[in-house]
Length: 366
Image (cartoon, rainbow, N blue to C red; front, side, top):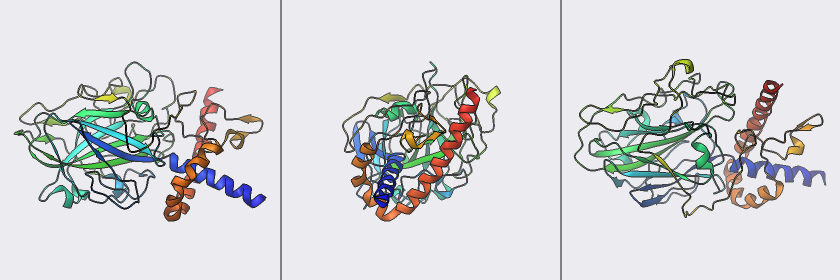
């Protein structure tokens, strides 16, 4: 009986860990949808580079920060144009909705210099930022919350970008445990496109990944992220300008290293970005509730009865029930076969860090 109980808890923990992370599942360019590959599965033809793990990239100096966990070059390079509408859809590890709601979305591009993008090594790519979205200006929360609600994120490619083959690096940074240095979770993705048109702009500034961020940047280390009046400072470079054209611009960009006190107020995405309602997808969509206090829904990984201190349980955080986790177990079994020990280790790490964060947040309320 004891072994059965332990096994049940283990399966619940594993399934919840799988649901607690995710990946870029689809990209749509001017209405043409391209489905990505499920991480660590046999790759199919897609322009989205396949990653081998749904876990986040940890640490600003991690070499996987360019395109994701051990990203493999994709088979396809798909057409786009200056001004193309590009929509990004994210999924959790079990195919449901993206599980996080705290932190920014940022998008970069890099020219595949000297070769085609399906053969290009992104290690030394020169990335320029084209879009960023953080806190909503009306104070209603993060744009990432809309991704968690099952919506896609749409932006417009720069108007004067020169023709050529490019990687589009679309990234989510989850900040739910970034109250300590090194807590930020990076989810970068890379999509291979061939831009047509007759643009002639030269983007500036450009950066490298790793190298563009530091673990202590104000937008990556965010000890006050849950405090009233918090102002978010985007990490990385300003949105690129183009030497001979207009490109896209944003009045809310903040260069790396700026302090929160000197930064502009949180801004919406650039005028060419939007959140789209959920669309039909090859990935099943399941609703996910946010926490009562605006925190990330995955900050609790066990039922509330196991997340108690004395007689007080952590009821303000959303929990995953055993029945929900059990329904996800079959879809996560292949993940356990290949990466189970790693996922369990990461789950334990995240759970311990979450307990620490909850204690900090409680102490600030008293």
